[in-house]
Amino acid sequence: MLWGAALMLAASLVACGPAEKLQFKGTDITGAEYGRSLALTDQDGKSRSLADFKGKVVVVFFGYTQCPDVCPTTMAELAQVKKSLGKDGERLQGIFVTVDPERDTPEVLGKYVGAFDPRFLGLYGDAAATQRAAREFKVFFEKRKSADGYSVDHSGQTYVIDPQGRLRLFVRPERLGADLPDDLRTLLKSG
Figure 1 (spheres, helix red, strand yellow):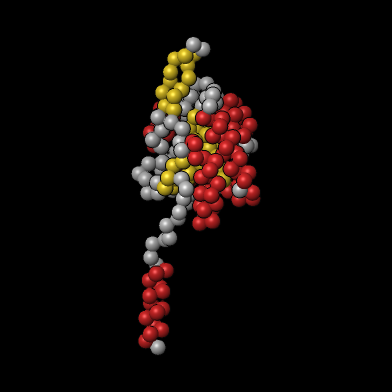
Figure 2 (cartoon, helix red, strand yellow):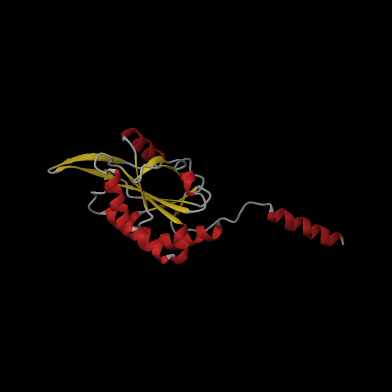
């Protein structure tokens, strides 16, 4: 009887211990001191924050609609990843944050993200709000003059936020298609 009580106590202590650490292919940045807030407006004029997406896995990417390479590639890969999740893809929210709010109007953003997936959101803000959001996610961007106006140099990483609203993953652009599907499945199963 004493042995049974000791076994029950040990089992209850294990159950109260720290949660099992999830294994990811992408870079696990759980507990990072950034990427905790995002307050911008979507292409339909609705104010958005990360709290709006509790219960979903959120994939956040910063870019601009006139980007010739990493932005359309990333958005196309994200749309493909969402499709690969089947019914679980309904619990994924893709978010494209523009670093070029001068040209990326709500109408332009809506058409752009909608071309990849009708449920993806394009977020924008004025110059100050865009800077705050980029700083919060450690994203670099800078306008560069070009022959036809300007382009925008910017970071190409993608961030993943779990269903509880915690920043969990940093994914490099070249690893998006390879790592993201399994990592999203892991997060969706965990909560």
